[in-house]
Each structure stands twice: as C-alpha cells, then as structure tokens.
Length: 118
Length: 426
Image (tube, rainbow over all chains, first blue to last red; front, side, top):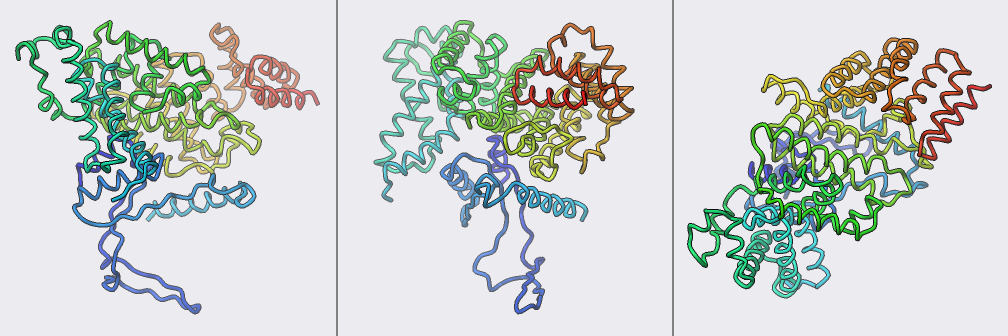
C-alpha cells in the first residue's frame, strides 16, 4: 500500500486520505420516530463496510477509474465506490446563492475547527 | 468486454494524461533527446488509439505504451541510421556494446521512474531557455496540456506557443543539455528556475479575473499539480514545500477574492468562510514540512517558504482582526534580508501600519518614494493614499488615489481607486 501512496503522491493527484478503524470501535446513531438510539459496533450484519476514503483531484471520471484500478491491483481484492464531490459551481446561482454557500462554508469551518480541538 | 470507440477514446485520454509525462521522461533518458522522446510517446499514443478500441485496454497500459514507444524508437534508430549519430550523443556506454547494438532499454527502464520525471522537470525548466519557453515546455511535457490549451491560457496565438516549444526542444538538443538532475552548487540555481516557472504559471492563473477564458484560472490547478508532483519527487528541498505552501494557501482564497460581478475583494475584506479549508490545511502541512527540512539542514527559510508563512498567518486568523501582524512584520523583515526589494518593503510597510498604526507605516512608505523601481507601480500611491486617508489627511490622500488610478492597467481597480479619491474630496 505504501507503494501506491507513494505513486499517487508523486503523481500529485491525492489531496487527502484516511483509514478507518474497525467497526468494533464504531457507533451508529439513529434517529427514528423522534427517538435517538446509539448502537455499538461491530456491525456484523453489514454486507460491506467502509474501510477508508481518499480524495483525488483529477480531470475526469475516467482518470479516477484508472487510479482506482491501480489501487485495487495493489490491494488484490475489494471494491471502491467513486463519487464526484459537490462544489458550489455545480449549482446555479439562484439555487445556491453565494450567501448560502458562504454560510455552508462557515459551518464547515466551525466543524473542522471543533474536530481539530478534539 | 465490448468497448465502444468513444468509451475507449475517453479511457485512452485519461490514461494518456496520467502516463504521458512518465513515458516521455523514461524515453528521454534512453534517447537523450526530449523532442525525440515526445515524438516517440506520441507514436505510442497513435498506436494505442488504433489498437485499443479493437483489442480492449491492456492490463498495464503504461507498460504497453512504453513498450510500443520503445519499438518505434528502435525502428527509427535502425531505419534512419541514427544509431551512428546517436553513438556520439549517447557516449561510451553504448559504443561499448559494439556496432549495430541497440541500447539496453529494458535494464535502463528499471530505474526509478520518479527520477526520470524529476530529470524531465529540470530539463524543461533549464535556465538556458527563455522563461516563456520553459513555461510552455513544462505545461506541455509534464502537465500534458495541448499547444492550444497553453495558447488560450496565456492569451497568445497557438502558432506562437508551438514555435516556442519547437525552438526550446531544438535548443536543448543543440546545446546537448544532459538529461539529469543537477547536483551540488548547481542544484540550488536550477531548482530556483523550476520553482520560478511553477509560480509563474500559478500567478498567471491567479491574476485572471472572472469572465476570462476558463483555461486561465485552470493554470492555478496546473501549477498546484506540478508543485504537488515536485514535492513528492524532491521531498528534501525546503523551498519545494515552501512554494507548495504558498500556492495551496493562496488558492484557498480563490472563491473569496472576487465579488458577484468580478470586482476584486481585498484580503482583509474577504469573507473568510469562503476560504477553502482543505487547501488551507494542505498549505499549513506543506509549510510544516518546509520548516522541518530547513531545520534539519540548519538553515533558515527560503523566500517561498517565508511567503508561505506570511500567507499562513492570514489563513490561521479567523477574522481580519485576529491576524498576527507582529509575526507578519517579522517575516517580511526576514524576506527583505534574503531578497531585498522595494515591493517587499512596501508590503512590510503595510504590515507595520496594521501593527503600529498608519503613521508608522507612512514613515516607511515615504522612504520608498524615491525608489525608481516603484515609479510606475500603482500600489505605492494606493497604499500611501490609504494611510493618509486613515490619518485624516484627505486632500493628500485624494491626490494619491488619483495618481494610483492613472497607473493601474486593471479597469476594475481603476474605478475602485477613483471612487476612493471622490470619497476623500467630500
């Protein structure tokens, strides 16, 4: 895996990545019928679990597919799901006015700041 | 698996973008000629476009392209009897293999691809080439941009860019520029040339305003991409991380620095909620690496890292009021020591004014008034006007804003300055 990380770092395409700890260390929080339940891991009933994420900056989905293929070749087996990230430019100005974009970003900044404090 | 021609072409496009720089770099080491390497790589692309839609995409497309390019290369060497001529250029290593032998391509290819890419970057940015030629060649060979894209980004006709590239490749061949990463004392100077090219590309994109061709802002991303590649290839160079820190942090403000109709918004007036936090984090991380490498080597920060550190001061401040101006003043002082320039001095004066009040800033600005380099620099009267206005010397301020307006070439900025002049007259 180190080789792959090195490859994508030298290619200048990976902006962020993190591995997730096992689901035994995770929680699920559910809101249903106005009631919040906290469920402890592990989540054995799940068919698939998310183990990591990575953020790539590429010019096309085809490029993203190519890098994912490289990743899976190194991994040997597995499945990845690719999703483009929403950016403010994906919305027309009246659907997503600049002030809302700003509020959105402010909230996110607060969240990150709080996360950094923990 | 059935592949439609369009699907295959899209996939080939993507693979090409990823592989082409490595391909050209690997080939350039073999044939010792960047121009020829690019031609061979193009030949391989043509072969892929012919064959892949029929045969499907190979498992290792990069290796396939390299093998195809090598075959073309060997064919060419034989057919054109280039081998004799190349003997001279390739030197003893190949002559030792005797007449008619082809270079040991396989063995040579096992070398680290990253090293080749680094060699290619240093060659494309060779100080022997004019700056515009370095920029065009770097975007073409490492960024993988087409001549048309480069032309659009720099607002010049396509034939001009094409000619720059052709001439640059010819110069590199004629002067027999070795395909290598420079060492020792030469490294610092050559690295400076590489960093200059990347930052120039970034600034060309950064100075583009709304309404311009989308290719221009795209240059920021290209420069960031190049900077990130370089940071991966040369992690022991503090200034490489310093430049990356500067670019990531500046890019974080791209969404906040213009208003709805494209008018520029000054740093302190920007809505900081619109700064991109991911890029800020990446910028701060790059700055930490720049500082760590410099510390390991027992050296101070270089000019890019210092500018990155100044940008980081703004990025860390939640509001303009939280800005650590004392630190910024210190950093500008350090920058002025290693790269003395009236522009740096002017920036330091602005920071001093923020820290110690407009009168202290004005003292420094007035010392720059006789500086010939700033004669036609609109920011000098603009800053002076701003400080005079804060001191309530409105009549002098108005004159300075008018002077600044007459010097700027940016229409939006000119209007802004004239408005400020009018406001002083009331």
